[in-house]
Length: 616
Image (cartoon, rainbow, N blue to C red):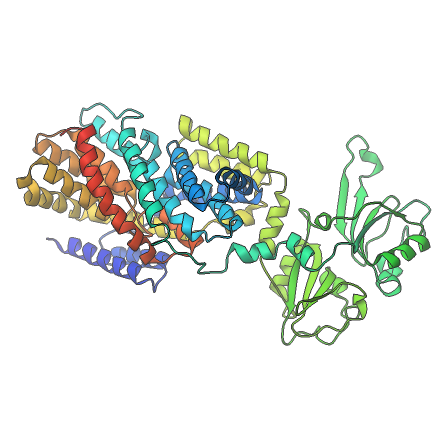
């Protein structure tokens, strides 16, 4: 055994130990292993970095952006509502229905793509049912892997083994040739996951996630602060004395105890053919113009005085608080810090609008909400303020002041507001991407990139910054850094040594014994390197073993395709596991305790099924 082979196995072993310890981030472990392979001379720099240019890694990044567009536009919520209606109030029915849908979708696109597209839908459904997403996300990942056996294009290992057959002079696999094996896998998988869902799957949240975001959404904040009945809209007629004056000159908060929050204005005279309505956050320098629509907060009595004094026209019907939230404007809750300069100051004296270009809509004082006559209220430590203005100003406030802390995630709500009403566009983009992948018009990575770019261009994802923020870089780095491990094992002769060892050890048991050995060792290595890399490495081993034993190569290569996809026991076993690990708040051993028994069950089932459909 050469020195480099020993070094490679030592680095792999230490990586596995660190992965299992859960004390070091998985992506850092992968990068450390990669550096050690370079520093010890096993790989050169170009070999070590090839994973970061791998099409699978780029495709995953694009799928994160597509998934963000699906979530942002509300398409995930709509699909979740359909699932909820179909399953009624039964979590059991929902669980099974979800797995069946995942299996069907996954039959025509990659398992990674399936998980990326379904993940926001599953999270949305779980929250709607007041259940933990952790109960659904590992089953989602596992079922996506099973669906990879339903058609030839559903998983890269299928294509790899088919090409290996062609390279050795055999007929390639048909589109549905592997389907019977996949159907058995799906059925057994659903039965197993249904049986263990309340025993092995985590039940509680291990981190604050979407629940807090939902609680602090603009719509919920409006309800909490009881703004209903405090919001009005008025039109400014041409004879109003308010026209041409800056809001700072009018001093409305002091005189009338009302606050102008937003100004709506029709397009200029030169654009009559294409009239547009502009809206802006009302600031001290805002100048009132004729025919403006002003959104105002205050009591009805004070509003009536304002309307009379300035000859305004009150628009009938209650103003909806949702009208204060748009692509440009939004609201958020902020907390006063212990050393805030705002403490003991009145709302009027702090000049919040002038200083931060934001309006204060209400005060939450330990559960008591103050929205009337706020200007004279002195702020106290522990107060929460509901502020309204442009999303950019809210985000700036979150970054650049020590006086307050912005609660929640205003970027998330800004993005959702920007994408409001674009669910059909997101749905069309998703269908286009899936169609391009099924028809193989372009390589899969190009089809996904087209979908990601269209999500940004059409506004389903707010902007490039928002797109980058939705990519789970931990998963990207983890996968890219682990791919060269397969290169190291192949380069040092580790795989050849393993194949020869299998034949020597199990050859006495005949072809079925060697088949079981190849399946098992493929399955084990598939827990630590990608299914694609595993299939690339073990397909030649299986072909050589089959020829040596005068057995059918189809049987052995199908076993490799199946085993390399059965990556359930570790979070680094497949990109789908890495995708759901963060979203579900899972730990390393969550995958071990659920995945290992499933691996063993599938090993027994497949050793019976594969020889039946592909005789030795």
